[in-house]
Amino acid sequence: MNAEGLLAEYETGKREFPAVCLPEANLSGVNLSGIQLNDADLNLATLTNTNLHGASLQRSRLTVAKLSGANLSQANLRQVNLNLAHLVLADLQGASLIQASLIKAELARADLTDAELLEATLSGADLKDAKLRRTSLRRANLSRADLRRAVMTAANLEQATLHSADLSGADLSGSNLSLAELRQTNLSRANLQGANLSGANLRWADLSGVDLRWADLSGAILSGANLTGADLSGATLLGTTLVHVDLTRANLAGVDWQGADLTGSQLTGCKLYDTFPFGAKVEGVACKWIDLSRNGDRSQTYQFPDNSVEDFFEHSAPTVKLIVDSRMDSEAHAALAVTYQQLFRQVQLPLTPPNQTLHRRRTVLTFELTSDLELFMTAYAAIFPFGDAQLTQAGLTGLLKQIPSYVFRQEGDLLPRFQQLITFLNQQRQQMDGNRLLQAIPPAAQKLDFFQAPTQLLLINSKLQTLMVYSNPLFGKRSVPFFKTADEFKINALPSFQPPGQSQVIEFVAGFRQSATLLSQRERG
Image (tube, rainbow, N blue to C red; front, side, top):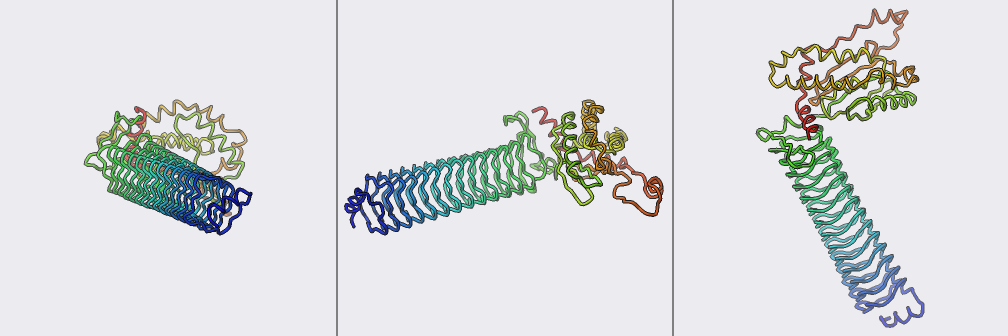
């Protein structure tokens, strides 16, 4: 059968032409919508501007075929061979190209919106200015593909291979690139705002000037990548590997980088407003100065002496641990949630609900904070719902009152830090109405055994120094048969709690290093 015969039979209403052999056939500009050409040989065929809407060409061979401007929307092109084919300005909207081969195909300005390219091979393909909105490219091979300025908003590139591909200037906002292979990929000036890059491999990638605002890079590997001038504000960098990465002038405002590894990276000129200096690994980081201003206008900078960052970045977030010697049940959980909601409205601190760890006979409530200065005030509020509140709060205030100011005068710059802490704590306490706070505790909660259980309150500063504020003598003690009454048990078996000594408190407060500086800078910014 030749091209003329196929067109004549198509005009009569015939649509199925399985395994037809039409190499080098000229079918340009004709209407073949809905035709079935499965397993056909159309190598070197000319189908320029041909209407193949809804056509089926499964497993067909169209190597070096000319399909520029062709309408292939909603077409079935599964496992089709389009290697070296010309598809410039082709309409492939909603087409199925599952496991199709498009090696070095010309797809510049083609429209592949909503197309399905699962496990397709597009290595070396030309996709400049192509539209790939919501296109599925899961596990597709796009290595060395040219995707400059391509529009790929909300595209699915999960586990795709884009090794050495050129995506400069591409719009990948909201796309899914989790576990994608992006080694040595050019993403300069690309828009990856809100993209999912978790677990992606971006070693030696060019990300200069890229927009990664609110992107998820948790667990991604960016060793050796170039991120100069990149905008990562609000990005998630949990456990991200950023070893020997150039972050010069990058915007890291408000990032969450707990567990990130920045060993040997360059951070000079980074914007770090509202970014907490906790949890990231910074050994060997080079940095002359950082920008802490709200608008990134260098109105508030921090200069590093001797290019060293050790005194700025801390080991971990300051933490308050409230340990309750009882397992929290659903009733206690509901009561605690309501109580803390009311308490936090009273306290002028950016408190968040605690992490809860339940053991068989114990509950651990962990408050992770943004500044060492918030430790005492958070602990003061956190213990309110519990029976140990009065003794614990008295212990908290007593710890600071026992420190004479002359001790800090001998230590030089520690005195201003101590005075700032006392001022901050007093201001916060004045804003707290004890009676109103007590009213915030539901009467039903006050009667629950959980809130009457013995507690321990532990403070951990950003230098990982610990301070036990209070430990109920009954904590960890169970009923003992040797004593007839509870009072006899307390008198004979329970030593009273010994608060930390003066030297221990001084050492703990002296660990409040750059946290105080950062807090005051954020307030001024």
